[in-house]
Image (cartoon, rainbow, N blue to C red; front, side):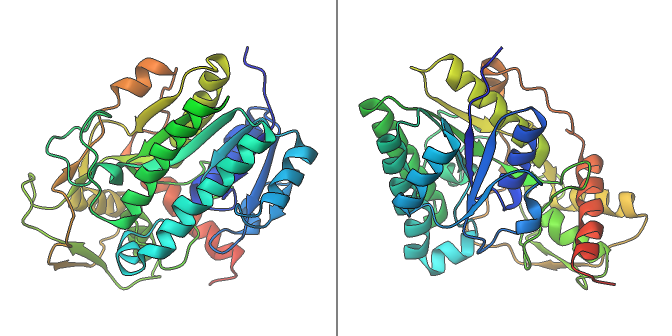
Length: 335
């Protein structure tokens, strides 16, 4: 039985971070959150979980948290995630995702925190030449977002080689869905994730859904992606932490996905099925840099940790996202 060490979750009021907080709390781990609430929401943090409102660049605050909470592991979700914005404002991404992580790592080394889980991304691969994508595929990011995450992976490896700290970098594919009990979900206004956009449209919050590109080398001409339920992803983080604690001299890099893909049109069809309605779809040109298909090879994660996804069903993912979107409307007092 793994000893449940106190965990600090950065960005724990955000989408994926708040699900990790729930997964840790549900499993009995002592957990605290640091979040500057620029894109996170106080309501996403469960009762009884300490929230430190502040920035991961604030070394004095981090030292106080480590002392007060006895922090022995960090799950790091804080950062900026919008790819087009990273192209328009690269310095924001190299600051928020790379420089601030350097400050967080410096505080972790100074505070003797031995375990670090990093929220990385399939964007580190750029446009891969093969699909499914293994962890050993060349990493050639095509935007500052992917590069800022890859730079952090290199930084983690160097820090782990020099200090008594091990890490796990989890490269996410397309994260979707919401907590099955509707305790948290994707709450950011103006989100760009397809399933979030589609369920907003299904509830009348948008007029239509844009389909970017119908001429890809895929069965129906639209881009194919590997959609992973956010609660399955959160469970993978907890299991990865157990592995780091059990093997303190080992560090890990693993893809997080289901190993199968769905096209944009298949996702929209699923929303139509779940809602028994028909979304208005507007076909448009493809966006620069979007690969035809991006699917994970997940053999490594399944061989390394006892991860068995519970929600690997597109209609279930859509149903949970839809339930959260309705709940979010109640929270915000929308009609």
